[in-house]
Image 1 (cartoon, rainbow, N blue to C red):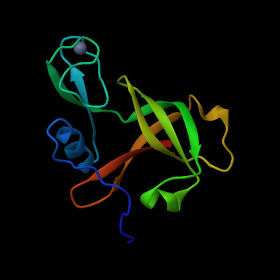
Image 2: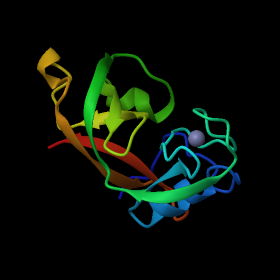
Image 3: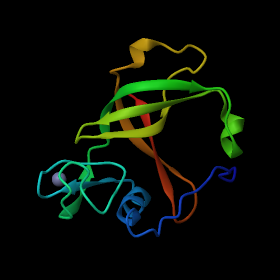
Image 4: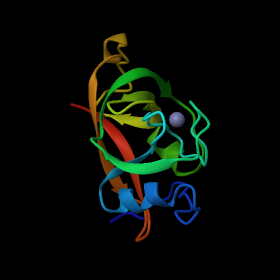
Length: 138
Ligand SMILES: [Zn+2]
């Protein structure tokens, strides 16, 4: 197996720890406000919609739709070896939007018809402690 050579997040930061703990188990965990019931991403200590601090973590479906995308021809670190690749914003089924590398599409033939395509999360094991979510067109 080739060593993972891209930047790896610190999974022990208290605000994002449940997200990374879930990813390690192959689960997409998202913060949800128990006051307004909206899911948000990235994880925060305060709900960005109603400013409540009453938050919980839910296991999300990992399903969503492509909101928009871009083809990356330049990148740094280990990502440079993968250019060109596609990044996208995903509208998650549970709410809010997440940025990701989009898989299952050909970066050499970008197509506006990808917008709105259904996607599903998958996880790459970056280290023994960290797995990183990506979304793939289904
Ligand atoms: Zn709220």
